[in-house]
Length: 456
Image (cartoon, rainbow, N blue to C red; front, side):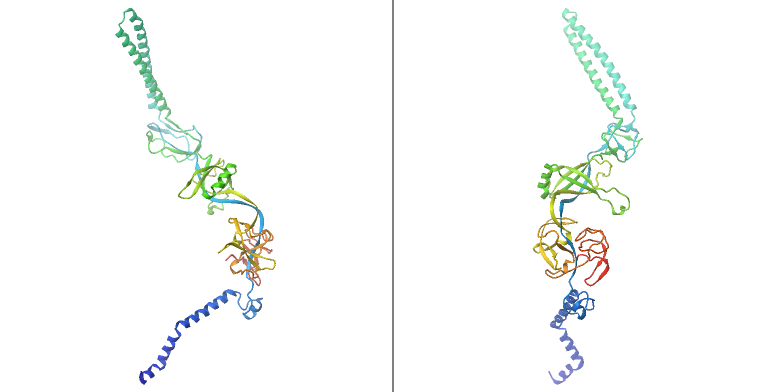
């Protein structure tokens, strides 16, 4: 490089380009990213800031020990826990009938209303009986004529039989009179069958309900002509008292289900699936208790479940065929079992664990065995004793062996020390786990009104 080119590159514009290239090197960017990450960690570890009141050394100078994390706690209790499995069931009708006409004719009347409860034998449709009444009279007249002929033929046959021995009548004439008597007797028998058929067809002009149930919409109204066994039925009737509830449970529960069926103790509770938009309307949504009568004879290979059925008398017509209901089946009861709120149970790489807060306000991470858990409680079979306090909210910032700050304790409506009743309340008390809005300590330094901290 000659001196002229060196002077040109060393001039101020080119020097700035060289400095820009030097600052965009990977090492510089790595240092910048590390500084940003360290600053973010400090903000997360000390959310109260350097100016928070009551923060000790960290509050005065931004340096020092971090305050204990705020948590909610609940006290473990001993109680009997019902082991309940939940599923969705379908209401089924015991019988559904589609009424059709068995003869041709015109519908005269339909003396019932759509949606009416009817009993077995009630008249629903009446078809014009005149043609069938005339056919019955004709069959009866033919029967009377043939019966008279049969009587005369029988007398002739008996007379000829007495005279053939004396040679007055030939054997051929005797055989002919006997055959005539038998033929006329057969004709009379056929006429009697025709009379019975005509009587049946006349009876078919009145269509009655074969079962007790509720009628649906009328599809063929009076005045229309109907044909025997037409594709369109006249009306459908559904039996709504009693009903069946069908639901399925996993095949893993089959052994205990069979045992409960043998003891005749398998019960189920039904709850109607009420639309939330109709919550303002008074609705009888009490649980319906039914006894399970049928346990299926095969596992559904597609779903790995087995069908169960229960009968319900449906006295107030609350259930309707085809309706979906929530089903709860009690499989067992765990006696004197330690229970905690379900949010207290955490899942780690080695299984379930809880944070136990001792008298020194320090958190201990303890492995537990969960025997049963639902939306309201967790039954602990090993690892926890009644009376111990467990963390229910704020576990993310808890460090095993480090102190914690208990906040958000239950107020009115709670279960006292360590209760975990769900609902709203206002006030203060030792223990936590109540969900809802309340007035309590929200941070580590003072009280504030608002919703209690939720589990991260």
